[in-house]
Image (cartoon, rainbow, N blue to C red; front, side, top):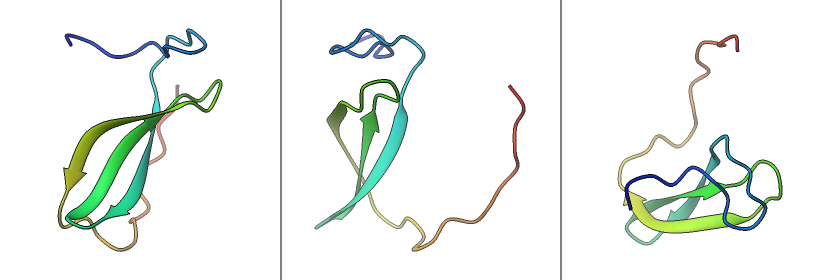
Length: 61
């Protein structure tokens, strides 16, 4: 796969939001279409994410 940016369900073409879910080996990271809500599990699992997120910068569009 060279690029995965367009939702395969609704065709939304501006990328995805991410989600984090507990997994036996750490946290699973997946994608959610902001238009229709379809989720995609790409098999990404990471270890060592902080328990709570630190508030960061706000970016203008």
